[in-house]
Image 1 (tube, rainbow, N blue to C red):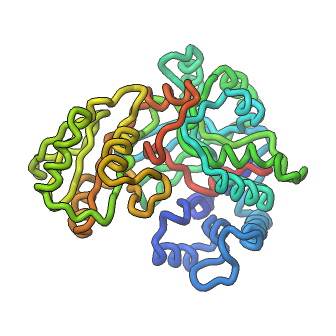
Image 2 (cartoon, rainbow, N blue to C red):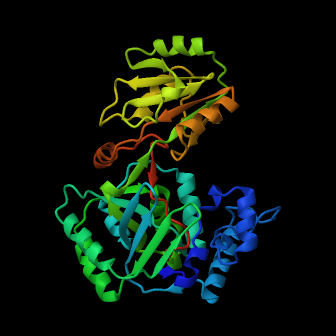
Image 3 (cartoon, one colour):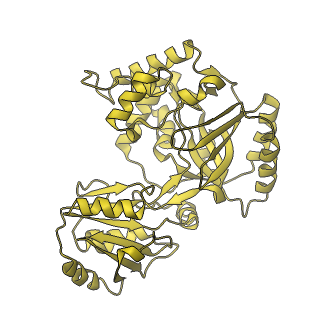
Length: 399
């Protein structure tokens, strides 16, 4: 495991570069020389001749990574050491284990997946790993803390190990506190013996990272062969699952037209126009809020079940049935909005774009995720926005 020194951890760890605006990114790169953004976004801001996603770009990432290590901004913590990481915000706290998962174990079904990956992205990320030789963000996994008998013992162990002062402890400007305890070799070995009993694990976030790590061996690069994948493992009850909303553009229907079209979807979907001042965020599976034409509707999905999630029903009856959009992953008219936006923000966004509508989704249930994964199925694209989101550069797994 590689991690920044305690005195620089708050400066090194960064969000994904895609979450920053150009102004924010420029400010971070100009004012913070320790930010891991200098590694994952080595060309900075402007008209670089090195295109993102090319071999030259990956080689520059590798060069910057080695510079960070040589400067002492990233340090080796131990080959088989575990860490305990806690993320705390006003609304949510989770505590879990940062450790390496066996790729052979993943191949043997010890990690359950629920999202289908794109082969093109798998191959791109595999080439990235083959060149950079490290992964700077653990995947997010969960274990069933209601049914697994060893879960209580593990959580008791985590509670005991976190009684001492953290090795890293800082709060970022998004008001999230990050606390890290780096375990000794002896503590890591003892915790490893207990976590091996936590099977299966369910992958909550990071499907392409898993797929690309598994694909490394197919590149024929013996130096880039990895036997493990770094993961952040938390109890299922500490996952924060939000809706992943849909925005559809080039729709200029009047409110009355929407009423007629929605009524035509009965008996699959029932609808009711509702006053916006009485509208709260949807929080029950089978309920979607539609915002369009200065009005809002509550949609009730009659077929919603453990086996059929809301996004699938919406795709079938609305996007395909009403608009003929068959490819939810690639259609340019359809975009996805993270569930971190409030209802008021979504309504304001929709009213500014008068030719668009927004479907505000309820969070999918963890039971639906597990049911899909257990039967080897896949959820529709962007079915859930799952937190915590980990910062890049805080934990690094070298290949």
